[in-house]
Image (cartoon, rainbow, N blue to C red):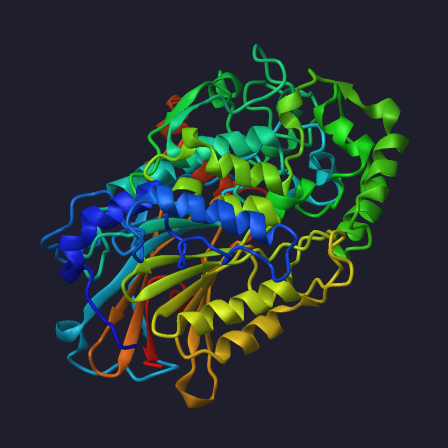
Amino acid sequence: MSRIRSVAAAASDLNRRTLLAATGAVTVSAGIGFALRPASDAHAAAEAQAATDVAAAGPAEAPVAVSRRAPLDHLDPYERGTTLSSVSAPRSGSAGYRRLGGGPGWKRVVRSELASAKSGRAARRTALASFVQLTDLHLMDTQHPLRLEFMRSTDVHSWRPQEILSVQGAVSLVERINSLPGAPVTGSALHFVMTTGDNTDNNAKSELEWFMKVMSGGRITPGSGDPRSYEGVQNSGLKQYWHPDSTLRDADKQRGFPHIEGFLKAATAELRSPGLKLPWYSTVGNHDSLPLGCYASHSDPFLTDFAVGGKKLMSASAADCKPLKEAIQKATDPRGVRYREFLQAHARDLRSVTPDEKRAPFTPADYLKAHLDPAYTANGPVGHGYSSANVAAGTQYYSFRVSDDVIGISLDTTDPGGHYQGSLGAAQLKWLDRTLRDNKDSYAVVFSHHTSASMTNTRPDPARPNEKRHTGKDVLALLAGHANVLAWVNGHIHRNEITPHSAPGGRSFWEISTASHVDYPQLARVIELVDNKDGTISLFTTCVEAAAPHATDFTDLTQTGLAALYRELSFNAPGARSDLAGTSRDRNTELVLKKG
């Protein structure tokens, strides 16, 4: 790259850039055309609107998304508040319900598969950019009628005891990020936060509102239906679910789960999120686009009405559920037809709940408009990456300027045809190639929800039935053709996994997949890009947990106490995987690359 500057060296420009970030002028080309598919019918109108947006934003210069915090003169490397210092771990025992406490931190591992780590680089390195990745928050409306909790009869992981506390856990994660003084290795200011999809769990408007308030700040009541009482599986009297308030000897209590008087009332009580102190960006995931994360069912009037209606299925036999589970796993029911028939066949088993229009599924346009709502601008940018051009063209991908030397590219890897695995349409793949070519003098970080290996779904987009869909292999091949790509950052698999990708001519990059915040160990990740001034680039990854204490107190039903319990319940959830933290090579790392 020809224009390498440290973040510190650009300190004098921070006030100007912060103003631009706040006005929303953050796409690489000031928003004109970059969010549009070629030959879009809406192209001309969107381009005109984008030009109006740019004119209103102020000076026509390359904008940069930066933190609103005052620039740091100097910050030494630090570990406190990260998993380098301490990580939650079971206190004792190997069976039954296990209490958590603080355990030893994870050391940083240097990975040199793509380039040799040269001695003396720590003294030479210059910061290029740093940011925080959140992924798979899965904010859940646990009283929603369309949920698949009843499938716990055949798959214990179909319902998890911690799910009702997803909002409290996400707020605690925001509090942790707000407490970070800067980048742990370089001491530079953090530029932004990116959330890489599955921000909601069931494509419900209630969940989307909670997500926007968690990220931007506000008061949240994490429940729906009857505001006076909980109407869900946890007070249903069905022994296959944990009943925290009841003395019922349910299946989870038999495993050692606690009795906590007043839990449900506290879990659905109003709480407050301070909102992120940094600018934040959003990437869409399959659970944000599709009901249950897998059904292209927005046009199905039965399922749409069922979502907001007054009936909910809470139990079904394992024999009945098994075919439905297999249909989801094998993607043989992408439009939810068999699910509709399943609910209709179990009409006599439905329980009455309070109807609620807030549970309606939201469309891609709803998702975009929520991000563009001035009520959720907070520390910017306006739209959190999305623009009026996206609304006009019906797209959910964009690019933005991170710093003088780095751009970010957010992809939409969900498949509108249904199923939880992903792909890219041909128009978006061409746009990605063009964006990388047009910014060849800047390093690039690509964001998506799906990993390369989970982009195997090439089902046609109903809105563009003749457009070819591309797999993760196609995306890898495209990225390998551009020397400026440093990283592909994603989620979806709920597991820490870092993969090197190499190509001829030194064109190599790292794929960084981060664990979810719904399943243990509930992590986010700080990523720092540095120039080692020796022909190599290093990417530092540092995992962080939510701010809630590792140890829990069953009598502490404050939002902080519940956030701590959220983590402990996720550790103990029946059927929970024990490998989601990844190996030491997938957590706190230094990833070395040759300069392209």
